[in-house]
Length: 162
Length: 162
DNA sequence: TATTGTTATACTCTATAACTATA
DNA sequence: TATAGTTATAGAGTATAACAATA
Image 1: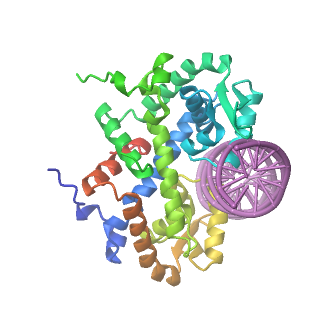
Image 2: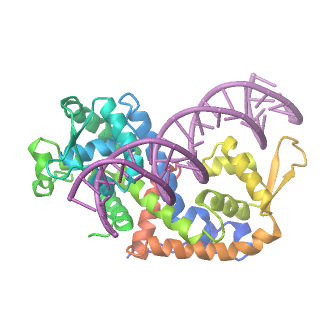
Image 3: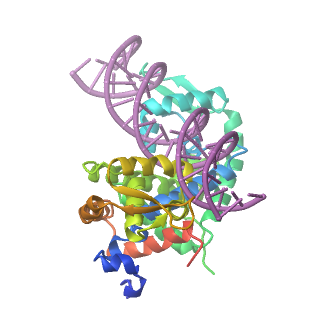
C-alpha cells in the first residue's frame, strides 16, 4: 500500500496561513492538470500533423470513418461527441480536399454515408505513424504500464461503459 | 522486458482486415481520450460554477492570485501557460466585477501587482467547495489512489519538473 | 412528430502582430 | 535592447436556433 498523503511542507505558506487545504490548491486539482495536459498534447499534435493539415478533430473523423467505412454522419457525431452542426462544415472541408466521400443511403434518403477516398486510405498509414510518434513524444515520461493505466482512467472519466 | 503485443481479439474486425493495428484505433489513443476527458470535465465545471459565472480559466486565475497575493501579471501568465494578450481582458473583466485589484508595483512601474478584493477572498471558500464537488462528480469512478496516480501522470505530461 | 443534415450565428480559448511605457 | 502590459485581430472548437427533407 502506497501512502499518497500530502506532506504539509508542500502546502504553500500563504494558503496554509488562511486555512485553505492543500487539496484545494490549483496544482492539486485533477481538472486543472487534465486541461493543461490536454492542451500540451493538442499543441504537440498540431506540430506533428502540420504537414498533413490535420487537427485532432479532423484526424479523429478520418480515423473513425476508416475503422467503420459506410458509417452515417449522425453516428460519427455520436461517437465523437460532436454536434452535427459542427460536423457538417468539417465533412465538407474533407470532401473538398478529396479525403472523404458522402454518398446517399440506399433506403433512408435523409442519411449521408461516409467513406474514405482511395487517396485518404493510402495516406492513413503514414498519418497513423505520425500520431504514434506524437503519442510517444508527449508520453515519453510514462512507462507502457503507466500508459495503460492512464488510458483506463481517462475512459472511466468520460465514458459510461466498462 | 515487457511484451507489448496487442491481443488480436481486441482488434476490430474491419481494421484488422486492412492491417491496421489495435494500437492505432482512435479509442486506444491517449491523446484522444485525454481530449474527451478534459472536455467532459470542462463541461461539468461550467455546470457547477455557472451561478458564480466562473470558467476554468478565470477560476484558475483567482485561485492562483489567492495562493500568491501580490503576484505579477506576467508571473500569473507563466504559471497558467497563458499569453499576456489573453490575460489582459480577463483581468479587466475580473476587476470590473470587483474580484481582482490591479496595483502599481513599488519599484518597477511596468509591473501590475494582483490581489483579490475582500469580496473575492470571502467568496473563495464557497467556490473551492463547488470545485471539490465538481471533481468528486467527474472522478466518482476513480478511487483515491487512482486519483493520486492520475494526478502524477498528468503532471508528467505537461510539466518539466518532478 | 421525430430524425438527418445543413446554415447562420455567437461565445470561449488561443495565437500573432503591433504598440506603449519602462527597465 | 529587453520586458510588462495592452489592443486588435484571426482561427479553431463548441453551443443554440431555425430550417428543409424525409421517416
